[in-house]
Structure formats: C-alpha cells, structure tokens
Image (cartoon, rainbow, N blue to C red):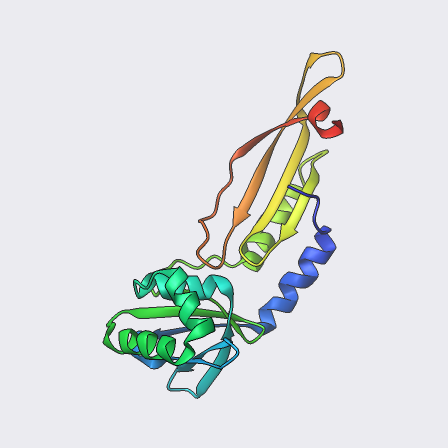
Length: 201
C-alpha cells in the first residue's frame, strides 16, 4: 500500500463528498438504462420525488450486469457495439425484477447498485469515530492513508509493541482499517506486523 494522501487531505475529501452524495432506494422497475451511440451509459432513476439522470461508473455497470445475470463481457460488447440492444435487454429485465435496489451516487455518477438490504457504513462516519481514538494512541503513526473509488484505507503503526529479531530488524504491530461504500468488501480491521527492514528494501 502506498502512502497515499495526508489525514488533512482525507478529511477534506470526505467532507466534500458529503454534499455530493445521494442514496436512493427504489424498486428496479423505477430504473431505466439509456446508452448513447458513443457507449456512454446513463441510468434514469424515477424516485417519485423527481427524476434523476446519472452517469454510470465501471463498477456500477458490472453490478448491474451481475444482478441481471448478463455476462459482463457481453454487456460491454452491447454497450460499445449495439447500445440499443443493451437498453432493450437491461430495461426488460429491470421491469420484470421485483427487487428493490440501493443506488449510491457521487458527483452525478451512479457508483454502486446494491441490494436495499445492504448495510451502509459511510467513510465519513467511520473516520469521525475512529480517527480521534487512533490519534490518542501514544506514538502511533499513520503509515498509509488512501481513499479510492472503491475503498478507504488507514494503516496505523504503534511503537509500543516492538520487537528486534536481529540487529536492525525491527518489527512493530499495527492495524489496517478498510471500508467500502460501494459493496467491495465489508469493514475490516486485521492486525499488521510491520518490518522496518522490509520498509527500506
């Protein structure tokens, strides 16, 4: 894992995303796909509170294909070569699908199409509760912090648990906290063994 961004940058981006996020929970029949000739896919969401039209990220396209049981390679071929065929396929199956979907959007893009039973844990809420605790740990340092389209990572090392196996070979304990808002894994907090020699190689 690379160092990524600073804690200040992470905080600013999480705060920015709050005002740009929108979650909609609607029946699949309230969704409609429209693909332009250039392959740009739009998802039209009728929320009964005003229609919304959104671009669709690559991950969300894959989730739509998976939920409608359309092989993704075929989905993408239709999108680029036969967009009208893709729309007919997707819209037909959406209208006959009785499930409700959680549509997660950010910056005008559908970034995830999930089950309405998906348990949301937003990165902002997690960081707001976890960061103050970690920052109070004596000597703890954030070795790596990153926020990607699919996950947030926090890698924290503490010198309070340290062992020297051989001269210059320092091992410290830590944890890696990961969370995904878009269905790419649940909250995870595995322990970490950090080797200083490995860091300098």
